[in-house]
Length: 190
Image (cartoon, rainbow, N blue to C red):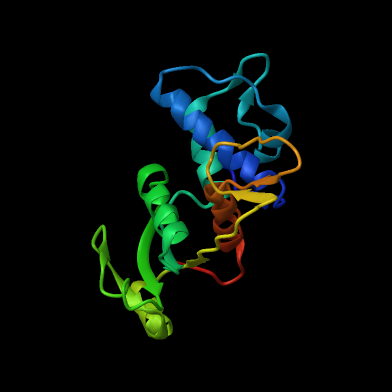
């Protein structure tokens, strides 16, 4: 296998989207087409006038994105957004496992979500050492009337009429930036 090359944060979410699309293409039994610009940095995986072989390309993208292994996630704040984020990961992103959940609300502490007990946020530091989470997500609930700007965390882009400003964020793509950086971090092993 070719040694992975560090990528820019701009390219990582696109590479993650390609990885997802290639996995879906492989599952469907389709052949890939050439995606030259972003994938050329991965090395000589393509064949002239034939495109890329899907399985080696998926393997190389997994290596570059740090997706050849599972990543443990800790969520701080388990209101609507925290719950939605955890549910999204469980349903769509098998490489990201929710290992710990924290909140400061007595009504939430002690509840379980898919076998993970919601712990008091004051125990965060000691609990993180116990569960071995490498990535943390802060999910805070914010409700306002008359919203003029929307931050969309769904993997589907939202388009609305003016004057509402929308920023679409693919959370799994953003997580892939973190896994990529962790994979290349000096002295990081796990």
